[in-house]
Length: 113
Image 1 (tube, rainbow, N blue to C red):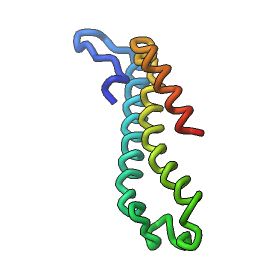
Image 2 (cartoon, rainbow, N blue to C red):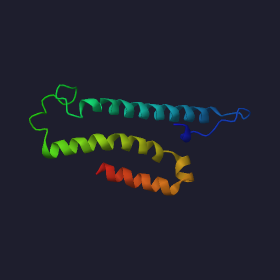
Image 3 (tube, rainbow, N blue to C red):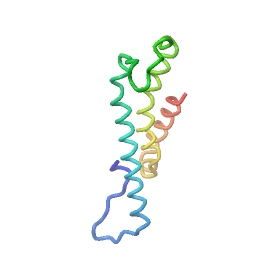
Image 4 (cartoon, helix red, strand yellow):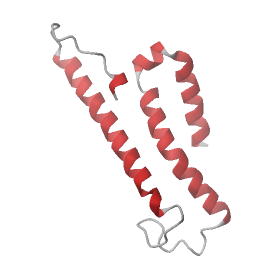
């Protein structure tokens, strides 16, 4: 995500360490976003539940009550947790927006439990 990286001044000489860190940060952000998008794209098999999809075969006998609510809570919280994690890992965001960083951390803890 763009907000995790500092803007590059073309006239300034950039160290290889900073460049490596920027490339790794960008790669992690893109990978996290791809995983989140892939997870969300599979929701079409879960709403309504398709018991012939990749994950749900054989679960139709107990896919009700507590299991159903836990499953839908889990698939709703997963993508939010991944996106919040990107924000929480950014030192720049933590320094510029400490209040939002704390709120995002609390939200992630609530989503975890």
